[in-house]
Image 1 (tube, one colour):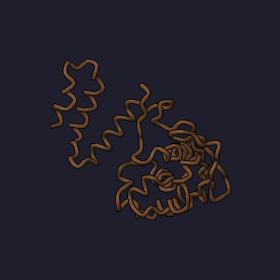
Image 2 (cartoon, rainbow, N blue to C red):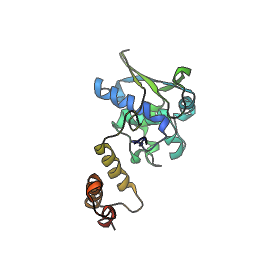
Image 3 (cartoon, one colour):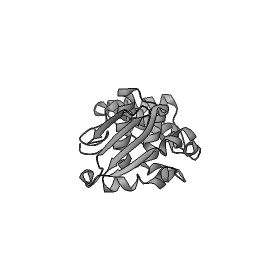
Image 4 (cartoon, rainbow, N blue to C red):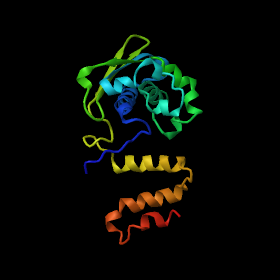
Length: 194
């Protein structure tokens, strides 16, 4: 019961900023062309992933450990998935243009052990400012993912696998897990996959 899940395929320290961008994007209909600046207020650990050299990741691992890349991806695409951390994806000029507008700001009050909270402010071209505080990111024990969230993540990951599951097989796995307590044999979760 006290286990967190990662909804996004990148470092957990980026997740509060992804959540903040997705929330602000939805609430205020924000799109990249409207955004002049993004300020990411971070604790000590998250700040290390927010410094200027993280704005233009040199490889997929740097992208996974980049607050600017994660926030920019969320703003440009409205989601953050495994498809956003490939060699081809990290050259996406639309995302890079937004990533370069992200400034990390150290806020010692946001420092804590484990996954830190984050605060994000988006400044639009007309000077409007929109802010969001995320104390507990999606997937944390305090803000758990729903079964539907987990199923969506499983579908995404199953398509990115070296041996991708068919849509039908993945749906069977999800359906079996959804009724796990009623199964006589837990092997039923994988029997329809092989």
